[in-house]
Length: 455
Ligand SMILES: Cc1cc2nc3c(=O)[nH]c(=O)nc-3n(C[C@H](O)[C@H](O)[C@H](O)COP(=O)(O)OP(=O)(O)OC[C@H]3O[C@@H](n4cnc5c(N)ncnc54)[C@H](O)[C@@H]3O)c2cc1C
Picture (cartoon, rainbow, N blue to C red):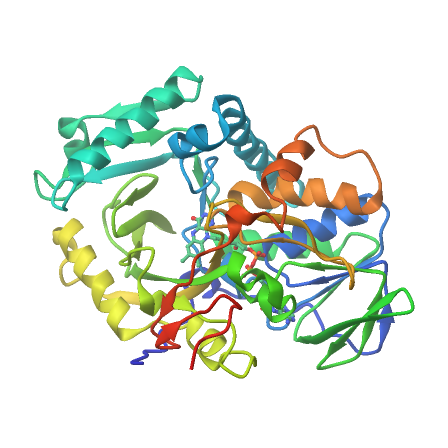
């Protein structure tokens, strides 16, 4: 498959502190694998409840999806309000949306507590319906229905008709039919946020954060789980995974509930005018502005794929059951074909940016369940492995509240009032999370019922 390795993600193209590595074998109460937002937040909560924790990061802080995303804080989970109302009833959908608000509140608290200079702003998220694509009338009707439900349930949303969308986008007239603003959604600089979070959390007594410690195997004997790493072994009664799309490498049984999907992103050179205000999403594209300082702005632009695009879906295992070589080799890379699709969407939706240089191009793996809600809880009872995983493109919507819930549960203290939502909707073994077989261009064959790529 044609690959173009791309560049370092814009968010990580900054001076980054090192956090040190593991110099000797250790034993802790909880070993956390992964220093993205999930692993870090779990460490914070567990330490608050009195646990001694070690965070083991195979690469550097934030090098997974947490430093490769859009940097939007959405309160709504990925299925959308209408779908959640149909599936779970209106009361539960409403509570899920409020959970997103609570997550946002916790993020603001960390930014204040650790004085993280991450350009936090709250400019909303605008969902647009394109009228240049097939079936746009059905999308417009669904968007309107979603707006009505949210408004009736008391959420701060506004409707945009074709005139209004014309005023807030620079696309040629007639590109968008309508749209909706969710005023509560926010944005930040993802790299500065995750690194600032790590700096604050690494100072908490009882938390040790190690970079460059790849966990190779997790096995249990005599009441202790041992993590074999490429540095020294780590022993702990409990293990928590914050390893996102790579979770099935440790717990293979989850492969069918966690589809590894690669998103790709581009960022323009600095612009003299602000290209947009807030975050935007539409069919085949999503974007936001980045304040580059000194009155200059950049446009961050992603998308360029359908959900079932075979070149964006990765198998975890090869036909022999070993880790599939494409997963990490290409999962974080920019591919030439996908980048061309992104360039095409950018030219369609932002024709005035023709000729503006693109300075950053990257890929990032995330992980989706079939029902669009995360897996939170016990992932492997025999080895005492827990996790907050499969965040379905909404890490900033669920990572804090899920960490609060799981951290309390693991430490045997009273959990938050929303614990029942995680128990009822996010159980790792639920059937609705499991995907039917999918086709990946990397295995050139469907992933079978056992999660293996067919030869
Ligand atoms: C293109 C893109 C756009 C997105 N946009 C948004 C958005 O706007 N808003 C939003 O809320 N979410 C968004 N997301 C999703 C969001 O980024 C993720 O849900 C979130 O960052 C996941 O955090 P995490 O800590 O679980 O995983 P990650 O940030 O991926 O961190 C996992 C870490 O685990 C480490 N690791 C893995 N295996 C091992 C091992 N064996 N040993 C040691 N370390 C290991 C990795 O090196 C990595 O650092 C987007 C994602 C992508 C890719």
